[in-house]
Amino acid sequence: MNIIIVGLGKMGGNIAKKLLKDNHNIIGFDSDKNQCNNIKKYGAKIIDSLEDINSLDLSPKIVWMMLPAGKITQKTFTKLLSILSPEDIIIDGGNSNYKLTRERFSEAKIRNIHFVDCGTSGGIWGLKNGYCLTIGGEKNIYEKLRPIFNSLTPKNSNGNLYVGKSGSGHYVKMIHNGIEYGMMQAIAEGIELLKTKSEYKLDISEIVDNWKEGSVIKSWLIDLISDELNNDKNLDNFSSNVDDSGEGRWTIEESIELGVPTPVITAALFARFRSRQANPISSKVLSAMRKGFGGHEVKNG
Image (cartoon, rainbow, N blue to C red):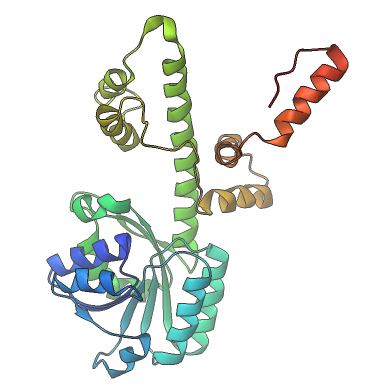
């Protein structure tokens, strides 16, 4: 199939490479010409602007957006609506908020353009291992696109999954990422407990390596941190500042709307917030109150 990929960064570039390996034709666009040149080496055709999509002799045109959620995705979507023709298809493979996805679906539908949301999990390892996809939108359009999805997913799994109407693909990916926050935080806290128990002089890298086989907590996350610990026992090359890209926040907002408690995911997100604070005033307030009511010793900042 012919697929136009907008956004050729790590994820978009790897998706392009994987599709090219399976003999799809890729037309790529990215504002970063280095990314374009990188994908061109693998056999993709490169266009210089979104407007060049008009000159492509394709019907329908299939455009896969692989862009960060937010303004850039909205700007690109709006531009595509002015370029594409009825029956063309837009796939959003990024981590857009599912509520915005539903709005975009309705806006595209007015122009008889099809809009599909595709939750894409697999990170930079997707090129090698395949991607786990959760797809929302019109079922008949999903069926038309199945050769694309089948090329991207692991051969021995059902990573190619149609989950329901518009927004559902991004909703499932949002919850997936919320779960990921909780799992990552639990592993991190457990390793910190091991490291802090100095009397045992535990070899953390050996212990985590041991957990990779036969353990109840065996997982890809354990595999990944084991690899890093084997390279750098104290993770000196990493900062303790942990960012978040939005999906955890949206998951917690959803839990509030639905009245479903998510204490683990919420605590994991708040731990990331705290990791970015240097000497936070809230802790100073706690120290001041302890001194005030109990005369407790206070360390100077």
